[in-house]
Length: 294
Image (cartoon, rainbow, N blue to C red; front, side, top):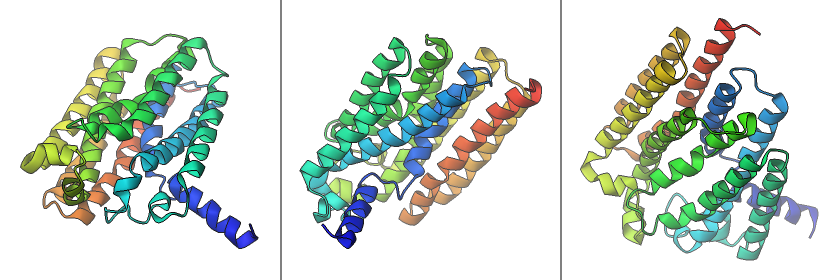
C-alpha cells in the first residue's frame, strides 16, 4: 500500500468512526462531565476526567463502527448515509470489525484503572453500545435506548469517583434519556421518508404528526428533572438555574426551527443541542466555583 492509498484508507476509517462529525462525541461527553463534577463536588481528579474523555471518544467511535456494520444493507438506500465507507466499499466488514474491536479494547484498558463497580458498569455500557443499532428493527422509540446508552457515563462517573451510585445519578440518567429522545427525534425527522421506505423504526415515525409536540415535551421533562435535581438533590442555587433558563431559551429557538419540519432546519436544531449541554455544564461549574472557590 503506497502513501496515497494509506491516506485514503485512514480517511475512510476516520469517517467510519465519525471523527469528522464530533457532535456525537459532545452529546455523549456533556452528561458525563455533569456527573464527574457533581460526583466530585466540583473538584474532579484531572486524570479521571482525561480517562473519561478519552473513553468517550473511543466508545462513541466504536459505536459508530458497529452501527454501520449493522446498517450496511440499509445505508446505501438512504440519501444521508449512502456515502458512508461501508456502504461504498471503501472499508470492508472484516476491517470494520477489527477497528471496532481495537477501539473497545483500548477503552476497556482505560477502565481497568478504576474500581470493580466501574469495570462492571463498563460491560453494561458496551452491551448498550453494541446492541443499540439493532433496536431500530423492533423498538418503536429506539431513541430511548440511545438515551440510556449515551448516558451510561453518568453512573460510571459516580462509581469511579465515589465507588457507589447515589439516586442523583439515576435521576441524571433519566433526564438524559428525555434529552436524547428530543434531539434524536429532530435527527430522525431528517430521515423520516427513508426510514419509512426501508422499514427502520424511529421516534419521528412513532410520534407522527405530533413529533414537534413530543420533542418539546421531552425537553420539558429533561429541564424539569434537572431543576428537581438542582433543588432537592443538590441544593444548587442561582447560577445553576440561570443555566437552565439559557437552555430553555435554546429549546424555544429549536421549536421555531423545527415547527415547519424542514429537513435542513431539523438537522440544525439537532446540532444546537451541543449548546444546551454546554450551558448546563457551565451552570454546574459556576455553582461550584463561584460559591465554593478553589
